[in-house]
Amino acid sequence: MGVKMKPSATGKANGEPTGLDDAAARRLAGKEAVPLSVLVSDLSKDLGYSTDRVTEGVMGLQSRKSITISEKSPYVSFSSYAASPKSLWFWAALAATLLSVAFVFATSGFALYLRYAFGGLLILFLPGYSLIETVYSKRELDELSRFALSIGLSLALVPLVGLALNYTPFGIRLLPITLSLAGLTVLLLVLAVRRKHASYMTTRGVASG
Image 1 (cartoon, rainbow, N blue to C red):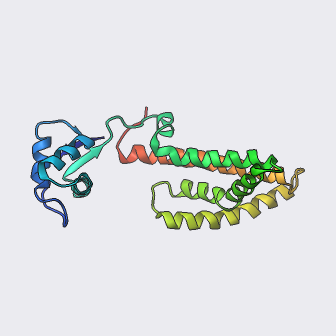
Image 2 (tube, one colour; image 1 turned 90 degrees about the horizontal axis):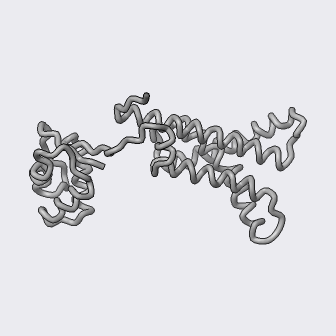
Image 3 (cartoon, one colour; image 1 turned 120 degrees about the horizontal axis):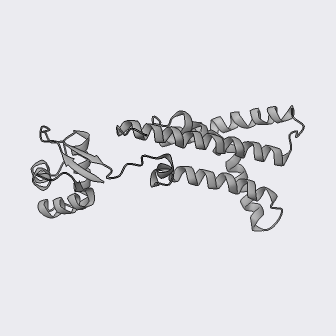
């Protein structure tokens, strides 16, 4: 990430290291951008504060729009965004979903306990979580609200999937229910990561070609 100074911004937040504004201005003067880690390290040496406190102060400068912190190379393409650290949640949820399907065939041993664990995730959490990530792609909810809604929506989605299967030749059996829930979850996860990428592009003013 790179940091740029906005010369017109002034002011000091409560608890911000003394002299941070001036020190940051000196370090950024005449430079197009400075890596965030380098800036924090230099300011820590200049001011004699810990890197943690300097980092908090730099975040305060950003919130007051005194500086701009931006990624050096935005994830313009969907594939680059999906492979970035910003999408780790997607791969974790996808892996849990696929493992839930894989362990449905376990009948004994330690794998049976994993079947119970991942099966519980597939029924009680993953469908609702993927829906929440799709609908609220801009982090409008805090983590606790997301967790609670994920469980609640999962409990609402599972009966609906079962009801739909009841009117198909497959019926309400273990494998059809597992595959249906997994398919729904994967579909919602893909939609969620695409929406998050679109939001990411919008907030950074990056135009996709």
